[in-house]
Length: 111
Image (cartoon, rainbow, N blue to C red; front, side, top):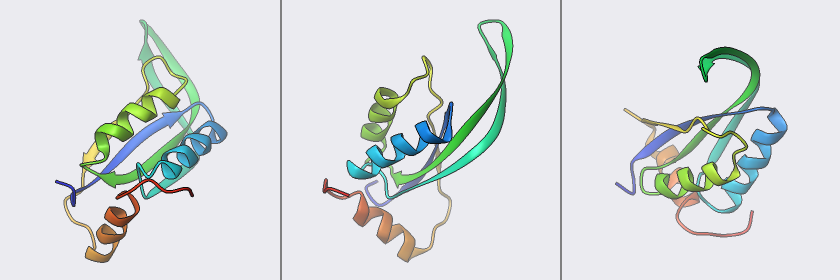
């Protein structure tokens, strides 16, 4: 379990908000890497209305063992009432990349 990787998706209202959350998650060793895709459009139903908003997407790499703590912290950091936090299992990953993700999420240090 500790050596299984997951990819977590989470959207934010801006690239700045996404980057701020990414820095916190990295500093707390909850993930090894966050890609911020700064410009996308999300179209969804919210409280019976169709919303059509610009957002930024975070693609977060972590381990299954660190996911519960990452999920809880991401929810705390998020400005949305119902934040998107979706973990996807990784079917295959290069051994050296997985070893790096495991190492980077192993202990809390200052980044």
